[in-house]
Length: 158
Image (cartoon, rainbow, N blue to C red; front, side):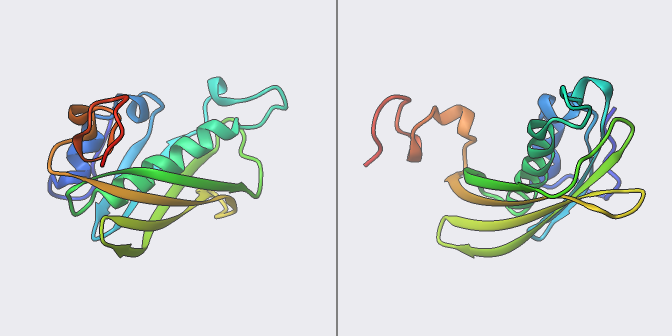
């Protein structure tokens, strides 16, 4: 189901291989490294809303996956601290979308990444996404719970 067309198994490739949500939507990680990533996704009939266009939540998920792969391409583990999206054009069933993420800044434990989602056939921009990341250390966020710096879920981190 998932193809990695770039040689090697870096941190982003390992993360994507374990990402059942993104792979379940038919996403392919095309490349990831040095703060950038590219992810492809076909728009299926299950992704179309009541207006006959791709539901914005699926477009956000595609962009978010590219963002996650970019901000995890070097290590340590990074998670989303926030994100915004602007939808610029509709996508339709049968379209294949390409999300390209680029690092804009890294400072301390934070980073800023821009993702452009385009339709592959004509290059039309479908969405622009900006994500903010935060590193959580060597262990993954799922091992730590919801709190920052390993604080148990429901406990405030100091």
